[in-house]
Amino acid sequence: MLPGGEIHGKYPASGVPAGSKTPWRKRRRMGPPEQLSLLRENHVVTLAVEQLNRRMLRARDAIDRAYAQPLDISRLAEVAHVSDAHFIRTFHATFGETPHRYLQRRRVERAMFLLRESQRNITDICLDVGFTSLGTFSRTFSDIVGESPTDYRARGYVMAAPTCFTMAWMRPSQERAVLEKRAAAISP
Amino acid sequence: MLNSINISHIFVFDQQQALDFYVGKLGLEVSADVDLGVMRWLTVRVPGDPTRDILLELPGSPAMDPKTAAQVRELISKGASGFAAGFTTSDAKKTYETFKAKGVEIADDLTERDYGTDFGIRDPFGNHIRIVQLVPTSHQLGPKVEGRR
Image (cartoon, rainbow over all chains, first blue to last red; front, side, top):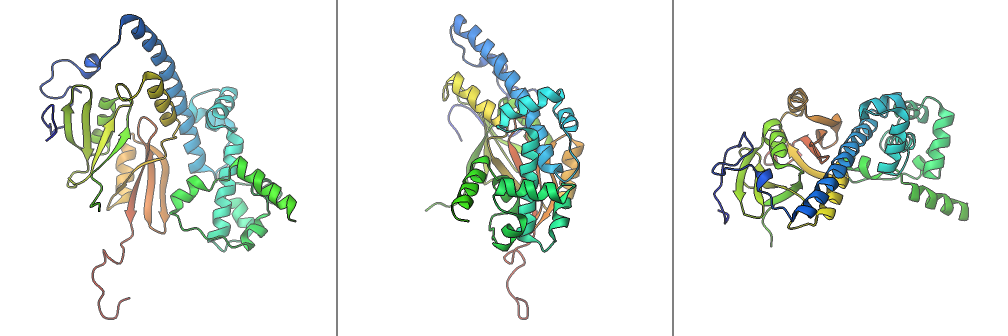
């Protein structure tokens, strides 16, 4: 038993725990009136940011889920319930890269996964992850990873983490790609 | 030495909304709902598993100043809280369908993986939760018998 009250084992449908008379929202401690109005203003701004963030996150989840489909900006902006131009700008401000680049990195990450874990040939992998041209795939892959799909496969990486985690952690970052490209330039 | 995980926490922005989601939609039960004066100590658990509680914690005063709390909420709403919690189920497909019908936001569709079948959801605040139907381990299959490896 915890100090200060009793345990209620039931889901309180009204939002008010059994035994209390005023809702929690009203019982929260508040500062002096001038602080209060400032808090309210900040709270409105924060709420707007949170709601926009949640929409962007919904679109980002859609990219992570449906990367293999022909996704375009209009469809993703629709998921986020904003205009196309607003979507690209806000996504970039929220996650640090454009939705197009995020999608490319996701597709390249999935291609890296298939190159490591499957025997499928490179053309099949290119189509599996949502690219429609082998030229674009190879160029984008090399640009992001710093080596070609064939070279990457030949190096024979092994991953031990669960696959849902490799998906979150292995999407190549801007920093790593740059470093690898520099390393490749130094030692050809 | 430590024995087990007793309690962990998930930041929520509204405890009533959190109850509607975690209890009303996911089917967890409230294990404690206590007025500590400065905070509402609210924990939930999986029915039938009384050993592990999740604290539905509000980021805010007195533990955090308003600016910090706002930063925490902003980060969580863009998915930056990472992997918040993982649950097991004996029927991932059925759970997936049930959650979908209840309007739970599906982040990641059902996927067959080497450790089982799983999918990802988001709570109303942006926390990432995964549900997995694990493939039986050698331990769960029971003691080794003659002829089986």
